[in-house]
Length: 121
Image 1 (tube, rainbow, N blue to C red):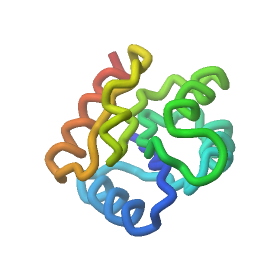
Image 2 (image 1 turned 90 degrees about the vertical axis):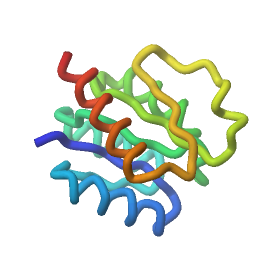
Image 3 (image 1 turned 135 degrees about the vertical axis):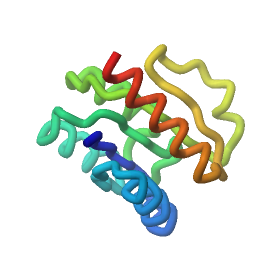
Image 4 (image 1 turned 30 degrees about the vertical axis):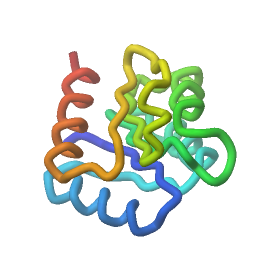
């Protein structure tokens, strides 16, 4: 089973995203801020995919978080999401993918499935 960490500061979006992923058979960790995500990653090096909002209310943004996780040694694939499409043109690292909000269930599952495949390649 693949382990996905969802980093989202909006409780409703966190709940729906987590439910959709769990319905597809993924195991989900939930973090509402970057510091919590960094701690989870230290405790769970087996995380396959980090699915993070770009605009987190506290601490670094989701792109910076993804880079911090990599610097900490995480091997997870990274998906960064935002409703602010200005982020869509931000240069991302090779192992990061941008997904625009609002995303459909199909888009979410496809992005996570592809990220899991990249992680295990």
